[in-house]
Amino acid sequence: MARVELIMPKMGESVSEATIISWTKEIGEMVEMDETIVEIATDKVDSEVPSTHEGKLVEKLFETDDVVQVGEPFAVLETEGGDEDMEPTKKETPVSDQAKVIEQEVTETIERTTSPITNSGERFYSPLVRSMASEEGINMSELESIPGTGKDGRVTKTDMINFLKNRGEESNDTPVKVEETKQSDNLKSTKSPNQSSTPIPNTGEVEIVEMDRMRKLISAHMTMSKATSAHITSMVEVDMTNIVNWRNTVKTDFKKREGQNITFTPIIIEAMAKAVKDFPMINVSVSGTNIHIHKNVNIGMAAALPDGNLIVPVIKECQNKNLVGITKSVNDLATRARASQLNPDDIQGGTITMTNVGSFGNVMGTPIINQPQVAIMAFGVFKKKPAVLETEYGDVIAIRHMMFLSLSYDHRVVDGALGGQFVRKVADYLEEFDTNQTV
Image 1 (cartoon, rainbow, N blue to C red):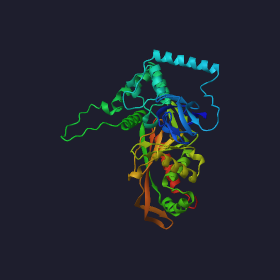
Image 2: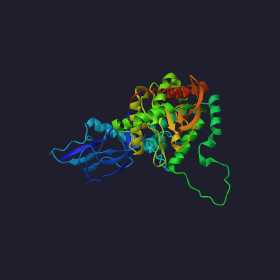
Image 3: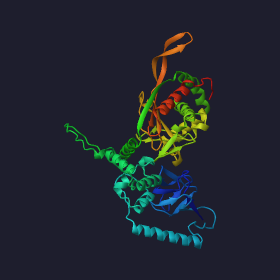
């Protein structure tokens, strides 16, 4: 018999640790190759970790709610073959043992001198976030007010760092900070639906249903975005007839060759990526008074899940992909989103977002900006309408496939001219679509 350690795999570019949610196997049970052995939560997504070997689980190196570093062993299997036991990686050199002892003593000291933060509601906080809150003297009510950018609105390490940075800045008694505090006080009533003081009349037949955890997080995130950004929306109408006719001619052959459908979403994403090249200041993020200009065009694609929740996977570096490449990325992310198989990197790094309100039969929408981005585009349903066409023989009225594009943007950094020109440019690229191209 040989002993094999299972190592916590790398789960994303910026993910260095994971919290164990539950074990799917108990000590003494057999584990097949690629069979899920543990479920984990990161600051981005929840996922399952498959076994890299086949054997019997003989040791759990961590318990539920423990934090495991990437590259660290978390379980030991007993496998067939080989008479020599592997030395567990936790049996290191005396120097490493001494370092672990020191680290443990430091951890115990911190635990003794800080008040623990425990979950008082349905919102999940990782041990790392709770530890940071304890060290910085953040109580539970203050922690619950922090907007989360992780899955289901979870507070991430980055969220905590940004909060602590702004918290420190707010302690400066400058006139600007005083004014910001007054503005913040005026917005307090929008932060939580529970703070509403408007009485609700008793109409006789009323059913009261408390918001579930996800709805509470969405409520907090949306009101935070509206309180943060000065929202404004510009709209244009686009003639999609040529694109509709082109897609009808290529979709069957594309399906046979690629084994997947080509939809209108990647065509619109391609047009957005082209327009960003013309107006790069729409592809930015805001941090305080600093503007971060992104070189890569990473377009988030809002997707509705079967349970009614919303997730935004990101198509990375759209400026370097052709229509076929974008189509494959869109289909892959949409399929894995519906199956809850997205990786942490799949939902982070977005620089601008698009959403398809037309899938619900809506003609247009005014979406809320996905912080810290400054713009989000919505496209509506395609409707056949009479439209005036200019021809060499004069103006004619024809039936065309028309669609509305709407762009919500942050008026703090994007003026009406830039926002209006950008959405118009996206429309131009769509109406000038090359119908002679092949995919």
